[in-house]
View (cartoon, rainbow, N blue to C red):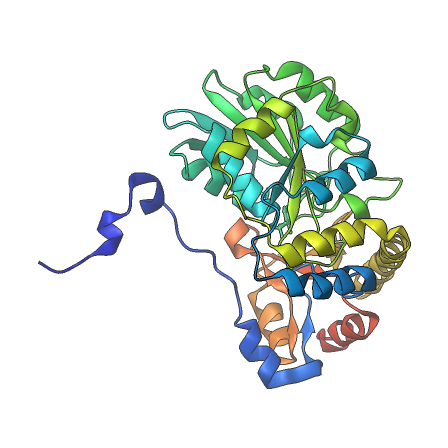
Amino acid sequence: MSFDAARLANAATAALRAYDPGHDLPALRRLHGAALAELGSNENPLGPSPLALAAARDSLAEAFRYPDPKGAALKRAIAGHLGVAASRIALGNGSHELLMLIGQCFAEAGGSIVHSQYGFAVFPIAAAVAGARAIGVPALPADHPHMPYGHDLPAIAAAVEAGTRIVFLANPNNPTGGWFDDDTLDALLERVPASTLVVVDEAYQEFVDGAGPRSALRLIDRHPNLIVTRTFSKAYALAGLRVGYLIADPGVVEVIERLRESFNVNGPALAAAEAALGDAGHLRRVRDWTLAERAWLAGELSVRGYRVLPSQTNFLLIDLGEDAAALEAALFARAVIVRPMGGYGLPHTLRISVGSREENLRLLAALPS
Ligand SMILES: *Cc1c(COP(=O)(O)O)cnc(C)c1O
């Protein structure tokens, strides 16, 4: 009999497919060098704080030792930064790992999780890993006056069943860039039973301006079933080091700690993240620059006739109203990488990260006139 590993996969894993990274970026970098405009992964083109880089470099002298399994120094720094107790914080190898851990620890085979259509792709995978059913709630319509493709929070609250263990929300959301208002989150948390955890993924919180939502952290004392996730990958520009964190009730953190791999965040990452938090000036420059560049790029795309969705993130979703594959291919041919959204059920849109001014100009020049 021949060996077929796929048939050995357990029921939860059998239902999954591996992450599709899109293009082979290492090969494209070798091919194009500095001429490649990488606008597909929402990375921060300004790069990390020099203090973070120096801390990571210094920590390499200790790389023969295991890192601090508790990440105590980074937790203290985050706690001080946010004004919460360190016992409320768990660290992850990126916030992606934490979302998966939440699924593994709290989703239940035979039960469900609730998420939004066009929400972050990791959410249903975090359900599948536990054999839970993912209930996808239809998003707001494409022609919604304020938030096309946005999360419909009343409908999400209504979709919660007796066996729903987790509601996953992203605010602002990837891939749409949109958000939901503070009062709709308040109402959802009042309605959802305490036996259902509500996860608010705030990977882009640092890019929110006065028009956008306040952090759900303001509700953390009132609702012990609320979990907020954050990352150092976007505004802090440490995507390659893999550090994220969550803020939750200490009891939730205690459960997650049971399954968390002891050394999940490596030494250079712990050191860099702590130093990055200490460089408030760098974060302010990143934020000010990104918000200005986002507005400029949205304007440039709009005057060229593209429908640009509202964004409180470091990327823009453009809606072509027709299949976007041809435009994506035309940009690719000119070494401009953007993200096609067919996998999200939005094949008529493209997600474009706010790159450096030079990259953004190359994008604009590569658009067909
Ligand atoms: C980029 C992103 C993350 C961050 O992932 P990391 O694993 O921390 O790099 C989390 N959630 C959303 C919605 C994102 O877009």
